[in-house]
Image (cartoon, each protein chain N blue to C red):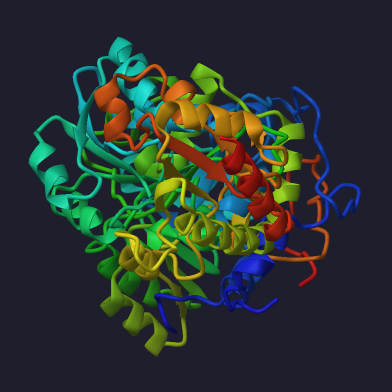
Length: 427
Length: 175
Protein backbone atom coordinates (compact mmCIF):
# COMPACT_ATOMS: atom_id res chain seq x y z
CA UNK A 1 0.00 0.00 0.00
CA UNK A 2 1.32 3.43 -0.90
CA UNK A 3 0.84 6.46 1.35
CA UNK A 4 -1.93 7.76 -0.93
CA UNK A 5 -5.12 8.22 1.09
CA UNK A 6 -7.50 5.40 0.12
CA UNK A 7 -11.02 6.23 -1.04
CA UNK A 8 -14.06 6.16 1.21
CA UNK A 9 -15.37 2.79 -0.03
CA UNK A 10 -11.98 1.16 0.57
CA UNK A 11 -11.76 2.61 4.08
CA UNK A 12 -15.29 1.38 4.85
CA UNK A 13 -14.05 -2.19 4.32
CA UNK A 14 -10.39 -2.13 5.35
CA UNK A 15 -9.67 0.63 7.88
CA UNK A 16 -8.61 -0.84 11.20
CA UNK A 17 -9.10 -4.42 10.02
CA UNK A 18 -5.84 -6.13 9.10
CA UNK A 19 -5.90 -9.93 9.42
CA UNK A 20 -5.67 -11.05 13.04
CA UNK A 21 -2.02 -11.02 14.13
CA UNK A 22 -2.28 -14.25 16.12
CA UNK A 23 -4.46 -16.48 13.90
CA UNK A 24 -4.63 -14.83 10.47
CA UNK A 25 -8.44 -14.71 10.70
CA UNK A 26 -9.52 -12.39 7.88
CA UNK A 27 -12.89 -11.29 9.24
CA UNK A 28 -12.50 -9.32 12.44
CA UNK A 29 -12.67 -11.81 15.33
CA UNK A 30 -15.18 -11.25 18.13
CA UNK A 31 -12.89 -11.02 21.16
CA UNK A 32 -15.60 -12.11 23.59
CA UNK A 33 -13.50 -11.84 26.73
CA UNK A 34 -13.55 -9.61 29.76
CA UNK A 35 -9.77 -9.50 30.26
CA UNK A 36 -6.36 -10.00 28.68
CA UNK A 37 -3.31 -11.67 30.28
CA UNK A 38 -0.23 -9.54 30.76
CA UNK A 39 3.14 -10.58 29.34
CA UNK A 40 4.72 -9.95 32.75
CA UNK A 41 4.37 -7.72 35.82
CA UNK A 42 6.26 -4.86 34.20
CA UNK A 43 4.02 -5.03 31.12
CA UNK A 44 0.95 -4.82 33.36
CA UNK A 45 2.37 -1.75 35.07
CA UNK A 46 3.08 -0.12 31.70
CA UNK A 47 -0.48 -0.74 30.50
CA UNK A 48 -2.10 0.61 33.67
CA UNK A 49 0.19 3.65 33.55
CA UNK A 50 -0.82 4.38 29.90
CA UNK A 51 2.84 3.86 28.97
CA UNK A 52 2.27 1.03 26.47
CA UNK A 53 -0.39 0.25 23.85
CA UNK A 54 -2.42 -2.83 24.64
CA UNK A 55 -5.45 -4.45 26.20
CA UNK A 56 -6.30 -4.79 29.87
CA UNK A 57 -10.04 -5.18 30.41
CA UNK A 58 -12.94 -4.87 27.95
CA UNK A 59 -14.58 -2.00 29.80
CA UNK A 60 -11.56 0.14 28.87
CA UNK A 61 -10.78 -1.31 25.46
CA UNK A 62 -11.29 -4.45 23.38
CA UNK A 63 -9.64 -5.48 20.09
CA UNK A 64 -12.97 -5.94 18.26
CA UNK A 65 -14.21 -2.56 19.47
CA UNK A 66 -10.83 -1.04 18.52
CA UNK A 67 -11.32 -2.06 14.88
CA UNK A 68 -14.67 -0.26 14.91
CA UNK A 69 -13.00 2.79 16.47
CA UNK A 70 -10.26 3.00 13.87
CA UNK A 71 -12.76 2.34 11.06
CA UNK A 72 -14.99 5.26 12.04
CA UNK A 73 -12.02 7.54 12.80
CA UNK A 74 -10.75 6.87 9.27
CA UNK A 75 -14.15 7.39 7.62
CA UNK A 76 -14.63 10.71 9.40
CA UNK A 77 -11.02 11.79 8.83
CA UNK A 78 -10.34 12.05 12.57
CA UNK A 79 -7.25 11.16 14.60
CA UNK A 80 -8.89 8.55 16.88
CA UNK A 81 -12.26 7.32 18.09
CA UNK A 82 -13.87 5.63 21.06
CA UNK A 83 -16.69 3.08 20.81
CA UNK A 84 -19.27 3.13 23.60
CA UNK A 85 -22.56 1.47 24.51
CA UNK A 86 -24.90 3.92 22.77
CA UNK A 87 -25.12 7.32 21.12
CA UNK A 88 -26.30 8.73 24.44
CA UNK A 89 -23.22 7.30 26.15
CA UNK A 90 -21.08 9.01 23.48
CA UNK A 91 -22.66 12.39 24.24
CA UNK A 92 -22.35 11.81 27.99
CA UNK A 93 -18.63 10.97 27.86
CA UNK A 94 -17.89 13.93 25.58
CA UNK A 95 -19.55 16.39 27.97
CA UNK A 96 -18.02 14.67 31.00
CA UNK A 97 -14.59 15.28 29.49
CA UNK A 98 -15.28 18.94 28.63
CA UNK A 99 -17.53 20.28 31.41
CA UNK A 100 -17.20 21.01 35.11
CA UNK A 101 -20.18 21.66 37.42
CA UNK A 102 -21.59 25.13 36.68
CA UNK A 103 -20.39 25.12 33.06
CA UNK A 104 -22.61 25.77 30.04
CA UNK A 105 -22.83 24.54 26.47
CA UNK A 106 -24.83 25.92 23.54
CA UNK A 107 -26.97 23.42 21.63
CA UNK A 108 -29.15 23.69 18.53
CA UNK A 109 -32.87 23.53 19.34
CA UNK A 110 -33.59 21.03 16.58
CA UNK A 111 -32.20 17.74 17.90
CA UNK A 112 -33.20 14.15 18.51
CA UNK A 113 -35.80 14.23 21.32
CA UNK A 114 -33.66 11.92 23.46
CA UNK A 115 -30.77 14.40 23.32
CA UNK A 116 -33.11 17.25 24.29
CA UNK A 117 -34.20 15.21 27.34
CA UNK A 118 -30.63 14.29 28.25
CA UNK A 119 -29.49 17.92 28.07
CA UNK A 120 -32.53 19.44 29.81
CA UNK A 121 -32.88 16.93 32.63
CA UNK A 122 -30.13 14.34 33.19
CA UNK A 123 -27.33 16.89 32.88
CA UNK A 124 -28.88 19.12 35.55
CA UNK A 125 -27.70 16.58 38.13
CA UNK A 126 -24.12 17.23 37.08
CA UNK A 127 -24.50 21.01 37.05
CA UNK A 128 -24.08 21.12 33.26
CA UNK A 129 -26.35 23.78 31.79
CA UNK A 130 -27.61 23.73 28.23
CA UNK A 131 -28.38 27.03 26.49
CA UNK A 132 -30.54 26.60 23.39
CA UNK A 133 -29.86 28.33 20.07
CA UNK A 134 -31.79 28.54 16.80
CA UNK A 135 -30.54 25.84 14.41
CA UNK A 136 -31.30 28.11 11.44
CA UNK A 137 -29.59 31.22 12.80
CA UNK A 138 -25.83 30.92 13.43
CA UNK A 139 -25.76 34.34 15.12
CA UNK A 140 -28.00 32.97 17.88
CA UNK A 141 -25.15 30.59 18.85
CA UNK A 142 -22.77 33.51 19.22
CA UNK A 143 -25.34 35.45 21.26
CA UNK A 144 -25.67 32.49 23.67
CA UNK A 145 -21.93 32.26 24.44
CA UNK A 146 -20.81 33.34 27.93
CA UNK A 147 -17.48 32.93 29.76
CA UNK A 148 -18.88 29.61 31.09
CA UNK A 149 -19.52 28.16 27.61
CA UNK A 150 -17.35 25.07 27.05
CA UNK A 151 -18.83 23.56 23.88
CA UNK A 152 -21.24 24.01 20.98
CA UNK A 153 -23.41 21.05 19.90
CA UNK A 154 -25.45 20.52 16.72
CA UNK A 155 -26.69 17.68 14.51
CA UNK A 156 -25.41 17.90 10.90
CA UNK A 157 -28.79 16.74 9.58
CA UNK A 158 -31.25 17.26 12.42
CA UNK A 159 -33.79 14.76 13.69
CA UNK A 160 -36.77 14.35 13.26
CA UNK A 161 -35.92 15.32 9.77
CA UNK A 162 -35.28 17.72 7.01
CA UNK A 163 -33.01 20.28 8.69
CA UNK A 164 -29.49 20.91 7.37
CA UNK A 165 -27.33 22.96 9.70
CA UNK A 166 -24.86 25.51 8.34
CA UNK A 167 -21.80 23.84 9.89
CA UNK A 168 -19.22 26.25 8.46
CA UNK A 169 -20.96 29.33 9.87
CA UNK A 170 -21.27 27.83 13.36
CA UNK A 171 -17.71 26.45 13.23
CA UNK A 172 -16.42 29.96 12.53
CA UNK A 173 -18.15 31.21 15.70
CA UNK A 174 -16.76 28.31 17.75
CA UNK A 175 -13.26 28.98 16.43
CA UNK A 176 -13.52 32.72 17.12
CA UNK A 177 -14.42 32.02 20.77
CA UNK A 178 -11.99 29.05 21.06
CA UNK A 179 -14.76 26.60 21.96
CA UNK A 180 -14.83 22.97 20.73
CA UNK A 181 -17.52 22.37 18.09
CA UNK A 182 -19.31 19.02 18.52
CA UNK A 183 -21.37 17.60 15.65
CA UNK A 184 -23.72 14.64 15.96
CA UNK A 185 -23.33 13.08 12.50
CA UNK A 186 -25.75 10.17 13.03
CA UNK A 187 -28.34 11.15 10.41
CA UNK A 188 -25.85 11.95 7.65
CA UNK A 189 -23.13 9.38 8.33
CA UNK A 190 -19.67 10.23 6.98
CA UNK A 191 -20.80 9.05 3.53
CA UNK A 192 -23.04 12.10 3.12
CA UNK A 193 -21.30 14.70 5.34
CA UNK A 194 -17.81 14.76 6.86
CA UNK A 195 -18.11 17.46 9.55
CA UNK A 196 -14.35 17.76 10.22
CA UNK A 197 -14.04 19.16 6.67
CA UNK A 198 -16.45 21.94 7.73
CA UNK A 199 -14.77 22.89 11.02
CA UNK A 200 -16.07 20.39 13.60
CA UNK A 201 -13.63 19.41 16.39
CA UNK A 202 -15.48 16.39 17.80
CA UNK A 203 -18.05 14.08 16.17
CA UNK A 204 -20.50 11.78 17.94
CA UNK A 205 -22.57 8.99 16.44
CA UNK A 206 -25.38 6.75 17.37
CA UNK A 207 -23.93 3.74 15.52
CA UNK A 208 -27.31 2.11 16.11
CA UNK A 209 -28.56 3.97 13.04
CA UNK A 210 -26.85 4.15 9.66
CA UNK A 211 -23.35 2.92 10.65
CA UNK A 212 -24.73 -0.43 11.86
CA UNK A 213 -27.62 0.03 9.49
CA UNK A 214 -29.52 -3.21 10.10
CA UNK A 215 -31.45 -2.38 13.25
CA UNK A 216 -29.72 -5.04 15.34
CA UNK A 217 -27.24 -3.32 17.69
CA UNK A 218 -27.14 -0.31 19.98
CA UNK A 219 -23.78 1.48 19.94
CA UNK A 220 -22.11 4.89 19.91
CA UNK A 221 -18.89 6.51 18.73
CA UNK A 222 -16.87 9.56 19.71
CA UNK A 223 -14.42 10.79 17.07
CA UNK A 224 -11.55 13.17 17.85
CA UNK A 225 -10.75 15.58 15.01
CA UNK A 226 -7.39 16.43 16.59
CA UNK A 227 -8.10 20.06 15.75
CA UNK A 228 -8.72 21.62 19.16
CA UNK A 229 -5.62 22.34 21.23
CA UNK A 230 -6.58 21.46 24.82
CA UNK A 231 -3.02 21.38 26.17
CA UNK A 232 -2.36 24.38 28.39
CA UNK A 233 -6.02 25.46 28.30
CA UNK A 234 -7.14 25.81 31.93
CA UNK A 235 -10.82 25.65 30.93
CA UNK A 236 -10.44 21.93 30.21
CA UNK A 237 -8.68 20.45 33.26
CA UNK A 238 -9.36 16.83 32.22
CA UNK A 239 -6.93 17.42 29.37
CA UNK A 240 -4.68 20.23 30.53
CA UNK A 241 -4.02 19.49 34.22
CA UNK A 242 -1.97 16.69 35.82
CA UNK A 243 -4.36 13.80 36.46
CA UNK A 244 -4.12 12.23 39.92
CA UNK A 245 -5.54 8.96 38.48
CA UNK A 246 -2.42 8.60 36.34
CA UNK A 247 0.43 9.79 38.55
CA UNK A 248 0.19 13.40 37.38
CA UNK A 249 0.13 12.72 33.64
CA UNK A 250 -1.21 15.58 31.46
CA UNK A 251 -3.34 13.75 28.87
CA UNK A 252 -3.59 16.60 26.34
CA UNK A 253 0.19 16.87 26.26
CA UNK A 254 1.10 13.17 26.37
CA UNK A 255 -1.29 12.09 23.60
CA UNK A 256 -1.09 15.16 21.35
CA UNK A 257 -3.77 15.38 18.69
CA UNK A 258 -5.68 12.30 19.88
CA UNK A 259 -5.65 13.30 23.55
CA UNK A 260 -9.39 14.00 23.63
CA UNK A 261 -10.28 10.47 22.54
CA UNK A 262 -7.83 9.03 25.08
CA UNK A 263 -9.29 11.21 27.87
CA UNK A 264 -12.82 10.03 27.01
CA UNK A 265 -11.52 6.46 27.31
CA UNK A 266 -9.29 6.58 30.39
CA UNK A 267 -11.29 9.10 32.45
CA UNK A 268 -14.81 8.60 31.08
CA UNK A 269 -15.24 5.03 29.89
CA UNK A 270 -12.93 3.60 32.55
CA UNK A 271 -14.68 5.31 35.46
CA UNK A 272 -18.29 5.60 34.25
CA UNK A 273 -18.43 2.30 32.39
CA UNK A 274 -20.71 2.44 29.31
CA UNK A 275 -18.63 -0.05 27.30
CA UNK A 276 -19.73 -1.52 23.97
CA UNK A 277 -19.98 -5.31 23.72
CA UNK A 278 -17.54 -6.84 21.21
CA UNK A 279 -20.45 -8.67 19.56
CA UNK A 280 -22.25 -5.39 18.87
CA UNK A 281 -18.99 -3.92 17.57
CA UNK A 282 -18.72 -6.87 15.17
CA UNK A 283 -22.27 -6.38 13.85
CA UNK A 284 -21.76 -2.64 13.43
CA UNK A 285 -18.47 -3.28 11.58
CA UNK A 286 -20.29 -5.61 9.20
CA UNK A 287 -22.82 -2.90 8.57
CA UNK A 288 -20.18 -0.27 7.86
CA UNK A 289 -18.68 -2.37 5.05
CA UNK A 290 -21.74 -1.54 2.94
CA UNK A 291 -22.33 2.00 4.29
CA UNK A 292 -21.56 3.75 0.96
CA UNK A 293 -23.94 1.50 -0.98
CA UNK A 294 -26.70 1.72 1.61
CA UNK A 295 -26.55 5.47 2.18
CA UNK A 296 -26.85 6.16 -1.52
CA UNK A 297 -29.88 3.85 -1.85
CA UNK A 298 -31.44 5.28 1.34
CA UNK A 299 -31.10 8.80 -0.08
CA UNK A 300 -32.30 7.90 -3.59
CA UNK A 301 -35.36 6.06 -2.24
CA UNK A 302 -36.12 8.86 0.21
CA UNK A 303 -36.07 11.46 -2.57
CA UNK A 304 -38.47 9.38 -4.70
CA UNK A 305 -40.89 8.90 -1.79
CA UNK A 306 -40.65 12.57 -0.76
CA UNK A 307 -41.41 13.71 -4.33
CA UNK A 308 -44.46 11.45 -4.41
CA UNK A 309 -45.77 12.64 -1.05
CA UNK A 310 -45.22 16.30 -1.92
CA UNK A 311 -47.77 15.89 -4.73
CA UNK A 312 -50.32 13.97 -2.62
CA UNK A 313 -53.71 15.59 -1.88
CA UNK A 314 -53.85 14.58 1.81
CA UNK A 315 -50.43 16.01 2.63
CA UNK A 316 -49.93 19.66 3.49
CA UNK A 317 -46.13 19.78 3.42
CA UNK A 318 -43.01 17.62 3.08
CA UNK A 319 -39.74 18.62 4.75
CA UNK A 320 -36.94 16.95 2.80
CA UNK A 321 -33.88 18.97 1.76
CA UNK A 322 -33.49 16.82 -1.35
CA UNK A 323 -36.62 18.49 -2.79
CA UNK A 324 -35.76 21.45 -5.01
CA UNK A 325 -38.41 23.61 -3.37
CA UNK A 326 -37.24 22.86 0.20
CA UNK A 327 -35.94 25.75 2.32
CA UNK A 328 -32.79 23.72 3.11
CA UNK A 329 -32.14 22.64 -0.49
CA UNK A 330 -29.24 25.06 -1.00
CA UNK A 331 -27.57 23.93 2.24
CA UNK A 332 -28.10 20.32 1.13
CA UNK A 333 -26.39 21.03 -2.19
CA UNK A 334 -23.48 22.56 -0.26
CA UNK A 335 -23.08 19.96 2.51
CA UNK A 336 -24.51 16.70 1.14
CA UNK A 337 -24.57 16.79 -2.66
CA UNK A 338 -24.82 12.98 -2.91
CA UNK A 339 -28.17 12.93 -1.12
CA UNK A 340 -30.06 14.27 1.87
CA UNK A 341 -30.37 11.04 3.84
CA UNK A 342 -33.17 8.63 4.64
CA UNK A 343 -35.18 10.49 7.23
CA UNK A 344 -37.77 13.19 6.70
CA UNK A 345 -41.07 14.47 8.02
CA UNK A 346 -44.34 15.49 6.45
CA UNK A 347 -47.56 17.07 7.66
CA UNK A 348 -51.01 15.51 7.30
CA UNK A 349 -53.92 17.78 6.55
CA UNK A 350 -55.93 15.60 8.94
CA UNK A 351 -53.68 16.47 11.94
CA UNK A 352 -53.00 14.28 15.00
CA UNK A 353 -55.82 11.76 14.30
CA UNK A 354 -54.74 11.24 10.70
CA UNK A 355 -51.17 10.65 11.90
CA UNK A 356 -52.24 7.95 14.31
CA UNK A 357 -54.40 6.29 11.61
CA UNK A 358 -51.70 6.40 8.95
CA UNK A 359 -49.23 4.66 11.22
CA UNK A 360 -51.65 1.82 11.95
CA UNK A 361 -52.70 1.42 8.29
CA UNK A 362 -49.17 0.93 6.91
CA UNK A 363 -48.22 -2.67 6.09
CA UNK A 364 -44.60 -2.52 4.94
CA UNK A 365 -43.41 0.36 7.17
CA UNK A 366 -42.66 -0.73 10.74
CA UNK A 367 -44.03 1.46 13.50
CA UNK A 368 -41.11 1.87 15.90
CA UNK A 369 -38.79 4.39 17.49
CA UNK A 370 -35.64 4.04 15.43
CA UNK A 371 -34.13 5.26 12.19
CA UNK A 372 -31.45 3.96 9.86
CA UNK A 373 -32.60 0.38 9.30
CA UNK A 374 -32.65 -1.59 6.03
CA UNK A 375 -36.42 -1.69 6.64
CA UNK A 376 -38.58 1.39 6.19
CA UNK A 377 -39.80 2.81 9.48
CA UNK A 378 -42.53 5.20 10.53
CA UNK A 379 -43.30 7.11 13.69
CA UNK A 380 -45.66 9.80 14.85
CA UNK A 381 -43.24 11.83 17.04
CA UNK A 382 -45.92 13.78 18.94
CA UNK A 383 -47.30 10.56 20.46
CA UNK A 384 -43.93 8.79 20.94
CA UNK A 385 -40.32 10.10 20.83
CA UNK A 386 -41.26 13.72 21.53
CA UNK A 387 -44.16 12.95 23.88
CA UNK A 388 -42.28 14.11 27.01
CA UNK A 389 -41.71 17.59 25.59
CA UNK A 390 -44.15 20.47 26.02
CA UNK A 391 -46.36 21.51 23.06
CA UNK A 392 -44.10 24.48 22.42
CA UNK A 393 -40.94 22.36 22.60
CA UNK A 394 -42.50 19.86 20.18
CA UNK A 395 -43.26 22.51 17.60
CA UNK A 396 -39.78 23.99 18.10
CA UNK A 397 -38.22 20.57 17.54
CA UNK A 398 -40.22 20.07 14.34
CA UNK A 399 -42.53 17.48 15.92
CA UNK A 400 -45.96 19.11 15.94
CA UNK A 401 -49.23 17.09 16.16
CA UNK A 402 -49.68 16.61 12.38
CA UNK A 403 -46.07 15.50 11.78
CA UNK A 404 -45.13 11.99 10.67
CA UNK A 405 -41.50 10.89 10.39
CA UNK A 406 -40.29 8.29 7.91
CA UNK A 407 -36.94 6.51 7.78
CA UNK A 408 -36.80 5.16 4.26
CA UNK A 409 -35.20 1.74 3.90
CA UNK A 410 -33.63 -0.20 1.08
CA UNK A 411 -36.78 -1.84 -0.35
CA UNK A 412 -38.10 -1.24 -3.89
CA UNK A 413 -39.27 2.34 -3.87
CA UNK A 414 -42.45 1.48 -5.77
CA UNK A 415 -43.52 -0.85 -2.96
CA UNK A 416 -42.96 1.90 -0.40
CA UNK A 417 -45.01 4.37 -2.45
CA UNK A 418 -47.83 1.79 -2.88
CA UNK A 419 -47.93 1.16 0.86
CA UNK A 420 -48.11 4.89 1.65
CA UNK A 421 -50.84 5.35 -0.98
CA UNK A 422 -53.10 2.66 0.49
CA UNK A 423 -52.52 3.85 4.06
CA UNK A 424 -53.26 7.49 3.15
CA UNK A 425 -56.39 6.45 1.30
CA UNK A 426 -57.68 4.66 4.40
CA UNK A 427 -56.59 7.44 6.81
CA UNK B 1 12.52 16.29 2.99
CA UNK B 2 8.98 17.66 3.20
CA UNK B 3 8.67 18.01 6.97
CA UNK B 4 4.89 18.33 6.80
CA UNK B 5 4.39 14.93 5.14
CA UNK B 6 6.80 12.10 5.84
CA UNK B 7 6.42 8.96 3.72
CA UNK B 8 5.80 5.93 5.95
CA UNK B 9 8.88 4.28 4.42
CA UNK B 10 11.08 7.18 5.59
CA UNK B 11 9.98 6.87 9.23
CA UNK B 12 10.01 3.06 9.11
CA UNK B 13 13.50 3.08 7.58
CA UNK B 14 14.79 5.25 10.44
CA UNK B 15 13.16 3.18 13.19
CA UNK B 16 14.41 -0.07 11.63
CA UNK B 17 18.00 1.09 11.14
CA UNK B 18 18.89 2.98 14.33
CA UNK B 19 20.01 1.13 17.42
CA UNK B 20 21.53 3.68 19.78
CA UNK B 21 19.34 6.68 20.65
CA UNK B 22 20.49 9.61 22.81
CA UNK B 23 17.37 11.12 24.38
CA UNK B 24 18.01 14.78 25.31
CA UNK B 25 15.61 16.07 27.94
CA UNK B 26 15.13 12.75 29.71
CA UNK B 27 12.93 12.82 32.81
CA UNK B 28 12.90 10.73 35.99
CA UNK B 29 9.13 11.35 36.36
CA UNK B 30 7.11 8.37 35.04
CA UNK B 31 4.17 10.69 34.19
CA UNK B 32 6.27 12.67 31.70
CA UNK B 33 6.19 11.82 27.98
CA UNK B 34 10.01 11.63 27.83
CA UNK B 35 10.11 8.93 30.55
CA UNK B 36 7.35 7.00 28.77
CA UNK B 37 9.16 7.16 25.42
CA UNK B 38 12.45 6.11 27.04
CA UNK B 39 10.79 3.06 28.58
CA UNK B 40 8.91 2.14 25.43
CA UNK B 41 11.98 2.34 23.20
CA UNK B 42 14.06 0.32 25.71
CA UNK B 43 11.35 -2.38 25.67
CA UNK B 44 11.51 -2.43 21.87
CA UNK B 45 15.23 -3.24 21.98
CA UNK B 46 16.72 0.21 21.37
CA UNK B 47 19.76 1.25 23.39
CA UNK B 48 18.43 4.52 24.82
CA UNK B 49 20.97 6.84 26.45
CA UNK B 50 19.28 9.49 28.65
CA UNK B 51 20.77 13.00 28.58
CA UNK B 52 19.92 15.55 31.27
CA UNK B 53 22.46 17.70 33.17
CA UNK B 54 20.03 17.84 36.11
CA UNK B 55 20.68 14.25 37.13
CA UNK B 56 23.79 13.26 35.18
CA UNK B 57 25.75 10.48 36.84
CA UNK B 58 22.65 8.71 38.17
CA UNK B 59 20.67 5.95 36.45
CA UNK B 60 17.32 6.10 34.63
CA UNK B 61 15.55 2.79 33.91
CA UNK B 62 18.90 1.06 34.41
CA UNK B 63 20.79 3.33 31.98
CA UNK B 64 23.49 5.85 32.96
CA UNK B 65 22.46 9.49 32.49
CA UNK B 66 24.83 11.93 30.78
CA UNK B 67 25.01 15.72 31.09
CA UNK B 68 25.40 16.35 27.35
CA UNK B 69 25.76 14.60 24.03
CA UNK B 70 29.53 15.07 23.94
CA UNK B 71 29.91 13.16 27.23
CA UNK B 72 28.49 9.95 25.73
CA UNK B 73 31.44 7.58 25.22
CA UNK B 74 30.04 5.70 22.20
CA UNK B 75 28.73 6.44 18.69
CA UNK B 76 25.08 7.49 18.51
CA UNK B 77 22.72 6.57 15.66
CA UNK B 78 19.96 9.03 16.52
CA UNK B 79 19.52 12.09 18.73
CA UNK B 80 15.94 12.48 20.00
CA UNK B 81 15.23 16.01 21.28
CA UNK B 82 12.70 16.37 24.08
CA UNK B 83 13.13 20.11 24.65
CA UNK B 84 11.35 23.21 23.34
CA UNK B 85 11.70 24.26 19.69
CA UNK B 86 14.18 27.04 20.48
CA UNK B 87 16.45 24.79 22.55
CA UNK B 88 16.38 22.26 19.73
CA UNK B 89 18.65 24.60 17.71
CA UNK B 90 21.80 24.46 19.88
CA UNK B 91 21.18 20.79 20.68
CA UNK B 92 21.12 20.01 16.96
CA UNK B 93 24.38 21.95 16.54
CA UNK B 94 25.90 19.96 19.39
CA UNK B 95 24.80 16.74 17.68
CA UNK B 96 26.45 17.95 14.45
CA UNK B 97 29.78 18.33 16.32
CA UNK B 98 29.85 14.62 17.19
CA UNK B 99 32.31 12.31 15.51
CA UNK B 100 31.01 10.12 14.02
CA UNK B 101 27.89 12.12 13.10
CA UNK B 102 24.53 10.70 14.17
CA UNK B 103 22.49 9.44 11.21
CA UNK B 104 19.26 11.02 12.47
CA UNK B 105 18.12 14.08 14.45
CA UNK B 106 14.54 13.57 15.65
CA UNK B 107 12.54 16.36 17.33
CA UNK B 108 9.67 15.20 19.53
CA UNK B 109 5.97 15.88 18.92
CA UNK B 110 5.40 19.67 19.33
CA UNK B 111 9.13 20.40 18.84
CA UNK B 112 9.99 21.96 15.50
CA UNK B 113 13.04 23.98 14.47
CA UNK B 114 13.26 24.19 10.68
CA UNK B 115 16.51 26.19 10.63
CA UNK B 116 18.27 23.55 12.72
CA UNK B 117 16.75 20.87 10.48
CA UNK B 118 18.26 22.55 7.42
CA UNK B 119 21.72 22.65 9.07
CA UNK B 120 21.51 18.93 9.86
CA UNK B 121 20.28 17.98 6.40
CA UNK B 122 23.12 20.00 4.85
CA UNK B 123 25.48 17.56 6.56
CA UNK B 124 23.57 14.53 5.28
CA UNK B 125 21.80 13.85 8.57
CA UNK B 126 18.19 12.71 8.29
CA UNK B 127 15.68 14.82 10.23
CA UNK B 128 12.23 14.21 11.69
CA UNK B 129 10.28 17.13 13.19
CA UNK B 130 7.26 17.25 15.48
CA UNK B 131 6.74 13.49 15.78
CA UNK B 132 6.80 10.97 18.61
CA UNK B 133 8.85 7.81 17.96
CA UNK B 134 6.53 5.80 20.23
CA UNK B 135 3.44 6.90 18.31
CA UNK B 136 5.20 6.26 14.97
CA UNK B 137 6.34 2.80 16.09
CA UNK B 138 2.81 2.03 17.29
CA UNK B 139 1.30 3.30 14.06
CA UNK B 140 3.62 1.41 11.71
CA UNK B 141 3.54 -1.85 13.71
CA UNK B 142 -0.22 -1.74 14.28
CA UNK B 143 -0.04 -1.52 18.09
CA UNK B 144 -1.63 1.93 18.19
CA UNK B 145 -4.77 0.55 16.54
CA UNK B 146 -5.58 -1.20 19.84
CA UNK B 147 -6.24 2.29 21.25
CA UNK B 148 -8.70 3.27 18.50
CA UNK B 149 -6.17 5.61 16.89
CA UNK B 150 -6.36 6.17 13.14
CA UNK B 151 -3.07 4.58 12.04
CA UNK B 152 -3.72 5.57 8.40
CA UNK B 153 -2.34 2.12 7.49
CA UNK B 154 -4.35 -0.41 5.46
CA UNK B 155 -3.12 -3.93 4.84
CA UNK B 156 -4.40 -7.36 3.87
CA UNK B 157 -1.25 -8.82 5.44
CA UNK B 158 -0.98 -10.07 9.01
CA UNK B 159 0.79 -7.80 11.50
CA UNK B 160 3.86 -9.54 12.96
CA UNK B 161 4.07 -10.39 16.65
CA UNK B 162 7.30 -9.10 18.20
CA UNK B 163 7.76 -12.40 19.99
CA UNK B 164 7.70 -11.06 23.54
CA UNK B 165 4.14 -12.00 24.47
CA UNK B 166 1.02 -11.26 22.42
CA UNK B 167 0.74 -7.55 23.09
CA UNK B 168 3.79 -6.36 21.17
CA UNK B 169 3.98 -6.05 17.39
CA UNK B 170 7.01 -5.69 15.14
CA UNK B 171 7.87 -3.08 12.49
CA UNK B 172 8.69 -5.95 10.10
CA UNK B 173 5.16 -6.42 8.82
CA UNK B 174 4.86 -7.30 5.14
CA UNK B 175 3.83 -4.33 2.98
